[in-house]
Image (cartoon, rainbow, N blue to C red):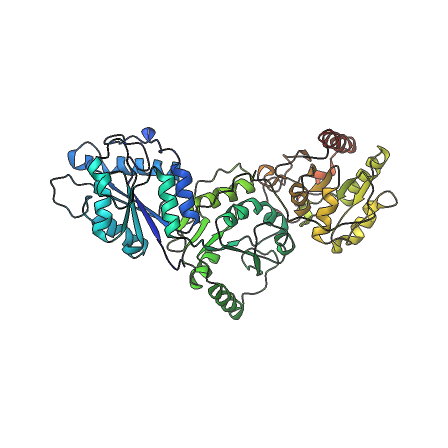
Length: 519
């Protein structure tokens, strides 16, 4: 946890976070002040808890209802990201309550709700009552004046700054430590690669970033920028071939995580996976702040429960949305595409100009039938393309058959980093929905995607590069998530026409040549 400085920032709502609309009960009138989201995301990324402390006397006056206030608050959160606690006073100025600012009640209640000592809180507001409430509670206070702020309020404030960005600067200067963060993506290589941009976003706001991954994602994880070290664990509720749960192994994992003293954790999952079992282990390890996407009720397992993610977006964008909800944004100049560490190792013996065909896949249902892949290689060669066939060590027999005497067979001869180098030098890659498709995208190589519709294309398409999809998107296996093809003859991919594949390769290769080798 943070060793010094502030642990929480408490902010006034109207005039500080959003434009002041008197007694506003209409969510459509909510307008954030300039720079509010960016300032708040910086505070979140630094590990601070955030709360809103707001006087709402319109309720006592009969001009607002509690439901209207809650709806406006929900709109504020929708525009500015999640807050860890909301406190509002419904009383009027003459009610004599202990919560209405400048009284200290709401500030103390917010600190208690956050589990943070009030002396490690800072109150940020636009009028003297905000400052007085913070100081009366024992917190620090920062004034961000607006045209309605009185000169005597400015003169009396201990800290006065121009805007929320400057307030964040001051708070972070007083809280210089950045969090140690554990990020988790515990399934396949392709899924780890798709999470790469979100991991870079976390790393940009962290002092140290550790990635927890499974054995199938380990080699890909080692290639990701922003990852300082790895924890490998075969997660029994995610791995397709899990071992029986071993209590001693789980205890050792919890102890390892506890020893590393993480300040925060972000659990990345696919739409069909639950983060809650891992969140429970992280709580047992003492991780104080955990973020994840969860439609299931998490109880006390999550601090940031990100919900309502659109169904039709890429896994990349899904992960980035969670990173943002947790307070981590991509740094300036990062376009959010997939990326690998460079330099990649040199691979000798390659043709000067070539296309990669990768016939294997992580599960059989996604792989194109070997006979069709062999026919594709022959047709590409007849069309004048030089072809390199790639595959894992377990796929040597497959790549030997597909390459025949027509193509260069690299099956089982490359590490993942070397495979990335081979893909980087290719005009395009012909590959199913499997890790090397995302590896190609990570090095900027266009992809002819032989995509079985067992999972949605929009979620797992190669991201950020030109793609031509081939295969029947409406085959009977659609959205089954089947590991083994449930339809005789594998019609979604066995029906891909050779001429269509050759044309797709030619089109992407021509585009690559026109762009000077850049996707």
